[in-house]
Amino acid sequence: MTDHILVERQGAIQIIRINRPDKKNALTRAMYATMSAALAGGDADPAIRVHVFFGVPGAFSSGNDLGDFMIVASGGEGGTEVWDFLMALARVEKPMVSGVDGIAVGIGTTLNLHCDLTFATPPTIFRTPFVDLGLVPEAGSSLLAPQILGRQGAFALLGLGEGLSAERAKVAGLIYEVVEERELETSVLAAAGQIAAKPPQALKIARDLMRGSRDALVERIGQESQHFRERLKSDEARAALTAFMTRKKA
Ligand code: COA
Image 1 (spheres, rainbow, N blue to C red):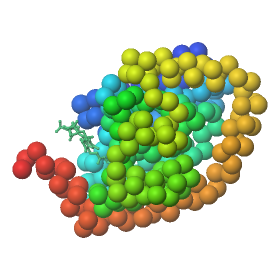
Image 2 (spheres, rainbow, N blue to C red):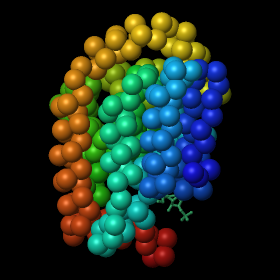
Image 3 (cartoon, helix red, strand yellow):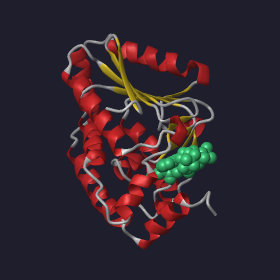
């Protein structure tokens, strides 16, 4: 357990708050593990009806901790925590709502593709610089983003690494609503409260029907992960990661 992820309950709402502001909410293996455990725990608890993700003001998440990536790029152990979390996102049984403010990079963007409703503030920029890092899309985003954004919108996001403002993300169907910073938490919690008040069995069937089979998603996450692991050891990725890790020393 780490206080970089805070898990709390408000009635039937489970709130998972990413809380590592000094690193713009970059996610470490321990943080992924805590989030996976929270999703599993909330799913198993009949008193919980909905999961909510928040970051901190100005940073939802800057993505995977690049130091952790560097360890794998240098031949070290990567662990299963990221994989476990991606599987948890793909298979979670209860609705997920996210509230995003500011930085939403990498998994800070792709996590939202799994959410049922995402609220974001006007300064939020969604960005996935996978290719610039010598990497490939993850979290099923190579499957989900084309479904949501169309092939060219997905290419701009995942291939070019183009930033998508909250307003454009809403028009593109990536998120549900744009709300001012001061209204973010209340808007998200109000939506989560609405979800929690629905008949849970009917809502689960409706959600399952809308999502369809998870098999293709799980298979795609597996394909992406295999490429991702290989790419982490590539010269392209090592150069990009080294550039980030040493940028302030230059
Ligand atoms: N992994 C590890 N550390 C990270 C990080 C990440 N993904 N993102 C930010 N940090 C750290 C920075 O190294 C810095 O640490 P320091 O104060 O010890 O030097 C701290 O968080 C603040 O980041 P900084 O870059 O100074 O903030 P910023 O507001 O100028 O820029 C970002 C924020 C997110 C745009 C920038 O940090 C960035 O590009 N991060 C990498 C994002 C990324 O590529 N993620 C992986 C996607 S697959």
